[in-house]
Length: 148
Image 1 (cartoon, rainbow, N blue to C red):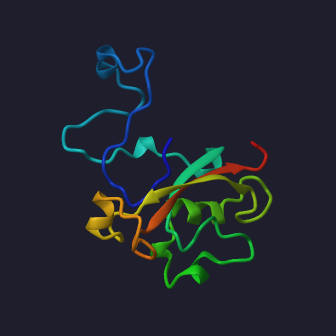
Image 2 (image 1 turned 90 degrees about the vertical axis):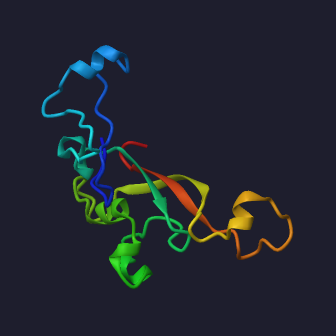
């Protein structure tokens, strides 16, 4: 499933017994359907309590999920810069461990931030003059502590 985020387009439908074959397009599971105008379908979303793992693109300045001692808004001026999944994890109390206490970062992989990196450094590898110019975000994998 997917967690609700700022993306409002159409998300993939769950696989049917036919997988990704043509026959699966004719089946409608529950309220799920495809539309030709890329409209959001609310049945694609799940609650964070149903998740065992979460993948989120995190700005470099956050590095990882804020812990119980840090309020996400203290990391930045507003909650807009804190990714939605991190906000959900902070509020998640489905494990009974308290707000945000049940999630652990399992892995992080660099991902080039195209909006913050100059064009020249995005298209060419220049081994000199890169310091401070090439900006990365992190694709982070989080797991619920009782899952790992």
